[in-house]
Image (cartoon, rainbow, N blue to C red):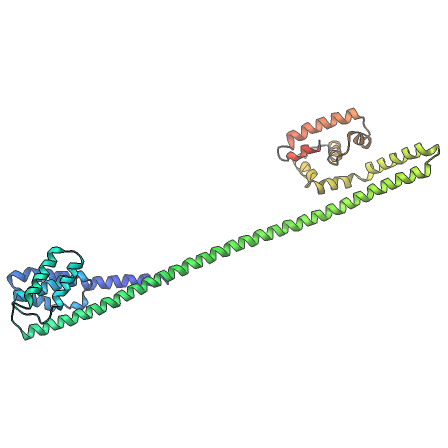
Length: 328
């Protein structure tokens, strides 16, 4: 649509230029003949089709020359229509010299000269052509304004379409962001569900352990076997944790601490199994004495192992995952 309107404008401009390209030459010739042969100058001016003029400046120049030729040929004009064209134009455009010349010709064109039937008929013909020019100028102005309005409307439509497209892209981006957030929320819900299940399991195990110890104490209370029975029960539970609960502890750490142990394994691939076991116990928040019992080592050895492990993790893992140092 925009391209079609542009073609129309270019066509109008080319057409206007083709109409007006020969007119200045004829006016120049008539002006040259004005002094030597005013009759030939008037004849040339009568040969011009005034209705085809392309602009008001050319029309004013023609009117001024035509009035001058009539005065030079001592022909009286039946009306002031043609000379008024020049007078009005040069007054509006503040062209003092041409305005004064047109005003003098207006005073002379009806008072000095004879009436000629043929000249009067030609004058009235030019007057009619002038009115046709005015109608054509109005149509051109209407067409030009219409084209401007169409261009503005087309520009507005294009702008609105661009805005709608931009809004659509923004909405799509927002929908994509909302979808991503929904996925994250669903993942978080799954993680929370696993954590909830894990916590329930831990609480159940903790309560089972408490219940078992209390049952042992109740059954052995007041007897010589009390101390030995409780010790045996605690040792049994420690062995159970050492043998059967390591995987559960490892899984609980990964679930609760954003797969911390998995990241350590990926970053520190040559980590020994003993160091990894110690790391799991540390990540579970177990005390040094508890770790000693689970590993079957003295407190001093466990402290040394913790120190060495801390140094290795600080140099190999901490640059990528600083949270690893929180386990110590």
